[in-house]
Image (cartoon, rainbow, N blue to C red):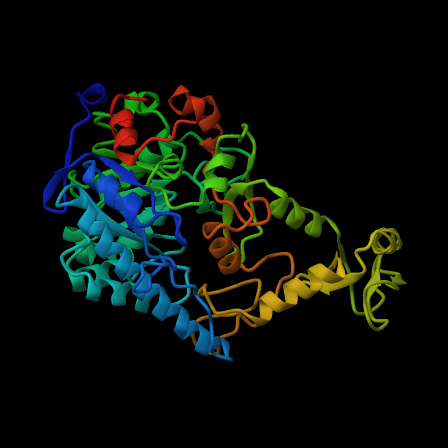
Length: 468
């Protein structure tokens, strides 16, 4: 028996539990976890964001870039991404054994999103039930899904965002709208869809926001059969009892991104799994360091704290003497045309004395102070850019037109591709970006995980179905 009579839904031509595995990018969800989730009767999600591919011996192929130009490396990245995602989908489909369903997840803001999505769908016909897609406004998602006859599941954080997508594009392909994923912008892990009108420090109750989303869907004539997927902050179904079978909200499904990280099949390294068990409330930070420009949520480890420190060692300057900028900066920069406030010059001298001897310009007419080692690392990462985003603040890359954002590369950010690949392949969890939802502290509190117990995906799904 499932919790509160939770009913299966029709999806991908079969009955599945309304439980979706969140698709965590760059090898954090792969065939093993998503195939097992589908085999347990839910909807597994293969990440099609720089997925791993394998050599004939079954070893992961390292993604090494040979091309000398960014555009050349960008094409290598697209090829790696398609090959990897195709391999992951094929393996997941095999593991699922005809049960549940397999989705893929892509970020619209990833570099080459469209050719990657088309390349994967072309080579996996009949295996993928749907495509979830967020991080941006994926207007072309419905048209691409229609070409390959798969469902599409846009990820939105407000009724307004859905309405914009529907009016502009999705109404033409309404029959393939598989679900609308509402991703809580304060609680979800990874990149979050906070708008400028919303306060990152003041979380809002998701219920009225999801109710507004359903009202918008009804007003636009979207079928009542299309579920809304609640994503972000979901742990125990019993905490969502008033959402199930609720006529105001209509059909609801639930997405689990963080909980499946700590399973036998989860491909993340053991040290990452071990670290999840130690987290306390407040250990996950909603921050703005991502080169995408989006807010994102990750564990506040030394990697993230060093980015916070870097931004704190920051002062504004002008090229001419103006306003309060009455003295010349005499540390960290070459040349004399850096005018700053006297108090800021004093701070800069103190940082310089503490070993932060190099000042790097930002796109916002400020300079940040870093160590010589940090400077070398930042500049190397910027030089090695392979165009993993459609627009990258860290390297000024853009994946179309003239291939530049036209803005100065931002040293307050970081190479997201490098750090996510590193943490997923046994890199140091303290010195890399460690995405997690804000409920990750519950691993430590939930008795299910006591005595170091790590469930299989099947055990986790069965447990979730009890309400716990």
